[in-house]
Length: 398
Ligand SMILES: Nc1nc2c(c(=O)[nH]1)N[C@H]1C(S)=C(S)[C@@H](COP(=O)(O)O)O[C@H]1N2
Ligand SMILES: [Mo]
Image (cartoon, rainbow, N blue to C red; front, side):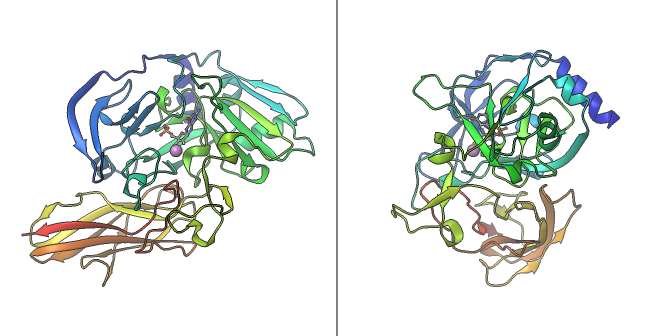
């Protein structure tokens, strides 16, 4: 509590002023493993060089090797995704307010000092874009062509959204809670980015308004000074630079809820490529996934005992088991699960196998505590959401 308060005060004291332009560019290029996968590696303010998808709005992917550095993703390596190009280059945390309005008994205008006076909560949680891995979709789909670096794991500190809602007092007509940041569209015809949660989700124990990320102020590009954290859910709901919390007496029908970020309402949320006219639902909890982090696809390994390391995570039930295959998924061996940082965090794992010379297909498969398991066949949907197929790595052992 004391500690968290100190972090908050550090965050409140620093007013970030940043020209949202890369400091360096073009020095290096990385090729992601799909068509048009060429990415310059550039450093934006408060960021180390990351893979540039678009400069305006900034969309930056984390180089995958970063995930081998530890369970937490460093703030300066954390991926960035914005929808609208009008992003403040300076936010003064001392004057920033969160307006709580709508179907409430008392409208509030909360300063960060007000938040500091409330009970603190803290946990590690994975922030993953719904479209993470979209570039690997087959057949290919439109949208930001991410490989698998549109995710990260951080320690978040803040207050319960529920405590804020309680302070405002909900009217009986309350149905959803809508969130809005300081960013906006360039053209008035573009719908502003707003996301909503059903009341039951918004009132859950662990949905947070966060003011610290890995014990430091949030980087501006990750939502300084405050953002919403909906642990276990895809980060489209994790609204950055949170400025408005509006309690709705209806189901939100704004563009970002009604038309975008929806998945097929079918078993497995999958459809046959090219299908149209199927019912959809808003995207929600993350699927179970796992990755190798200590080498990439196409790596060359030494023959003999080889230790493989990686990460796994799901939508909040936690990781029950991780298995490694060195024969393309025919046989599997159990990996050792490393320290448990909670059900919303990356779980590190390791496994040692006997590498026999030749071309080998390594594969990693995670099972979550809720019984969900990764499968060899990828589902498909028109927006390339929910990727969680078993990832395979073709390696040469010599
Ligand atoms: N205000 C605001 N919040 C936002 C968005 C946005 O465009 N504006 N994009 C969302 C989406 S789709 C993603 S993937 C995450 C990305 O979080 P990050 O940039 O901190 O990695 O922010 C979410 N929150
Ligand atoms: Mo996203």
